Image 1 (tube, one colour):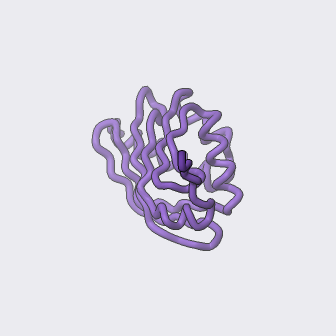
Image 2 (cartoon, one colour; image 1 turned 90 degrees about the vertical axis):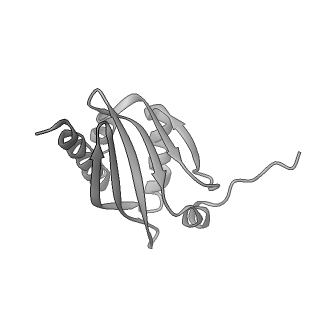
Length: 130
């Protein structure tokens, strides 16, 4: 199996762990200093550093019965792109996650998805008027 295929298998196992609610197994696939970038202006948008912060994000998503069903994986070197369907509280959209693999673990994730759906379901960040 090529290194790229190994990376795709790692990401597939991560999605399986997320679907099964196996947070411990999912966290074992992440670098201790993982960085996760969640786009938009929702209350869950931002950059999360480390497993602790990411665990908080995943817990918030679980409150909305989050499911992610990847339909396609594309690998190039240390990067894997997963494209698929996202469902939160019964709303469904499409998105892509871009994973960077380092030393056999996920080191960086950037999410591309429906930010308007996230704002509807989690609320929009309040902007200070100072």
